[in-house]
Image (cartoon, rainbow, N blue to C red):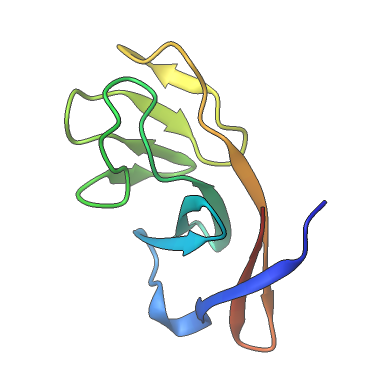
Length: 103
């Protein structure tokens, strides 16, 4: 497990929102939904579109705006294709009002 890196203030990501951050060599999306915070690869495994820019969030699922692939933000599993490969997920925590990700 890597070190936790602060990516944003906790209040910078509202309910139902996702934002991307460069963490080391990874582009990581951080999203908030249902009171939970998720961190996952911002790159869709289908056609490498960014999930955080325009991706719709419903519960723990984010949908890629390019072709409609859906991923579970907690596990990375594909919920609905055309993607067939899961996305990477990362540990995330809210520590003292700061969102921190470990890659």
